[in-house]
Image (tube, rainbow, N blue to C red; front, side, top):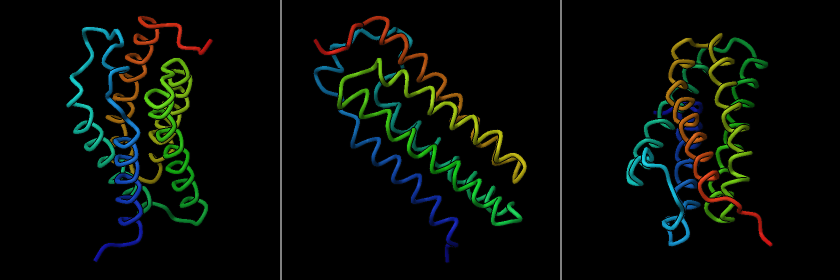
Length: 159
């Protein structure tokens, strides 16, 4: 019924979304942080990530179907593996270790991985490249929000 690329793309999105949810603790520490007035409400993050990761999974399938060689398929796999790692690292840095300053450094790598997806998926599927744009926009916004939280609450380093 489902092809291997479709199953892999769905697994990628579900694992990232699920892990992100499990690693995000909206507890007392987070609630006490000073946040900018332009931060979206907490309830919006779950639906936003669900849509964004769903679009990125769709992009993976389109790109995979547009590949011609084993080398092309390895590029798509490498892009999604790198993104998976960088996406997964942000939440524990910010929420578990309570280090928005380190998460701000890490988000640069996450942003670069999403940008790489936009650029490198394009030869396989122009639509796939465009489906990544909301992910890039959201991570760009999240990076600005992360930076503002660091600015409003520093220092975070342990004594």
